[in-house]
Length: 407
Image 1 (cartoon, rainbow, N blue to C red):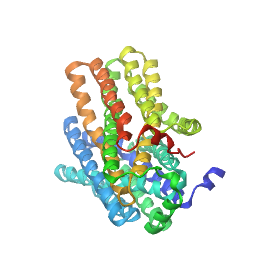
Image 2: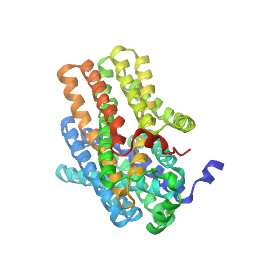
Image 3: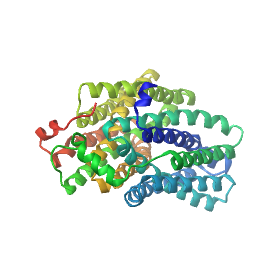
Image 4: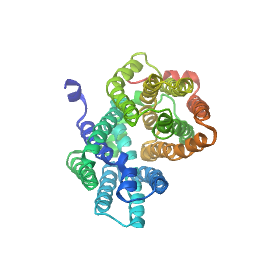
């Protein structure tokens, strides 16, 4: 509790709002496919097509959220995007004809994608002194909400899918209430003065905007490659485990392990990285190596213990990479482009989540699981190249080592 009290009020409000939002979203997102196939009588391919459109709309929403943050600030962007999400969810809950349902799913994806760039941009604003800690906390809270939401969503869905939609919509309304009345966004003038007083939070050497933006693009490209491989756990690997004879409950248990490790291991791993003062670059490179090791292990093991070990290794890599990328984007961003930079990060993740299942399915169906696993290792190599070179557009190695890592 003493640690919680040490956080700024605005950060605590943001964390609580994010917990409510991620819990509500997790009620629904695992059940979309089941609702379309069982509730609406559609085929799996039809459901997959709608989810692809939904994910594509999230990509557009990510860029839109970053644009709106830079134009109308974070609080207004959040209120508009969450209000729109709530409206679309309640409309879907009444039961719609198939063409209208598809349209609502596209609009819902657009609204949901708009939420995350201002969340991460605000995380970098409301606690400048915290450095990467803000992003670690957002990541931790997000995963805790997902763990709670997915567990409760299945229970509620047993009574009625409509209840799931209502709970999701209600959490959006709670989110709006929290942000509207409790979140205090720093004034741009005050924010600028704080940055001038805290030079350690920004690089020691002046970086031209073009160099910073090019570095961000390479960073986002590496982030996209990471998501292409990570998403295989939710798509192709689940099918691979079924082919090997493992039950659905055995597969679900892996995600329980993932959630527990994130909640317990993330603070420990981030404390260790800060303790040894590891630069962000090496944190990213280490995370990718863990990703690659995971698929290397799965290519050699068909036992359930191999999948458990693979999930543990993958989770460690996830902890190292996923909160670090938005933290680096915040460090790179000029004050008037913070939203755009976070929008590109969210967009890169959504692109990886969109093309990953398609690419994985093509490799799995066309060449078999072994080629898929080795292909993921190969894709991880591209992520290594991106994360290993993104800084070279800005600093020499001596300049990079002079940038302080916030404890």
